[in-house]
Image 1 (cartoon, rainbow, N blue to C red):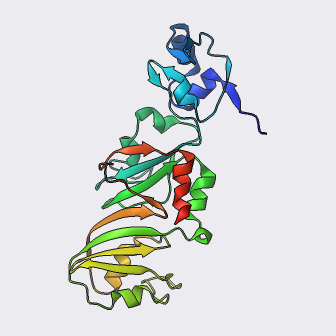
Image 2 (cartoon, rainbow, N blue to C red):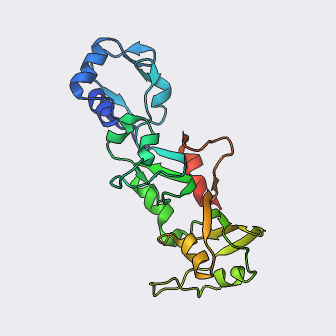
Image 3 (spheres, one colour):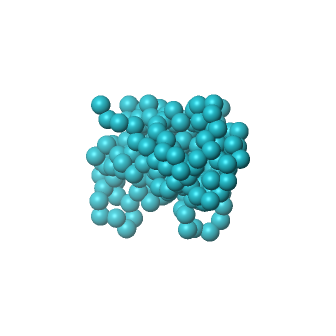
Length: 245
């Protein structure tokens, strides 16, 4: 049986973005860090770090943030970028400010472009991130697309052929599934994540995507009660649901 890891309290809270070690010692001395109902006065004390920590510890009266690994489901709104470096409003601005300095750092699991909304996963778990995006896993992504022109009727066969080529590339796309939902609306399920893939697929058959929304990654669907710009922390069982489809 593996042992529960331990860490100095000041280092843990510093890694979670609460502040410097000096600030954590001041919080502890003021009785603002409580573990199992008892104020921890020594910020240098070692504590056990497990997934139950937010239920056992409060900082300034609020449950402590989950320790790594952290996996977050975000309903990405339009007009927000996924990059740490790109100019403009970023997905990380939608999360608690202290999360921007967490160690290890948070990264998006793949990306959605600025004008695409929907389900996005964010994590500090590198192994989980790479398992989700690995081509060997064949994790499907489902998108809802609103189109500029009516569907022609042959898009499903073209997208599902396994021989479709995108401009500037030398490798055909894996077969994708198109489900018409109306004259100018469709669901497209793909197993890859090439640059602007869905938009480029429709452009290749003479259409233009006006609105694009990702509703599902593998077996994980965006909940109807999670509004644009809101996020939810996933437990491990829920996060692994991605691989259940």
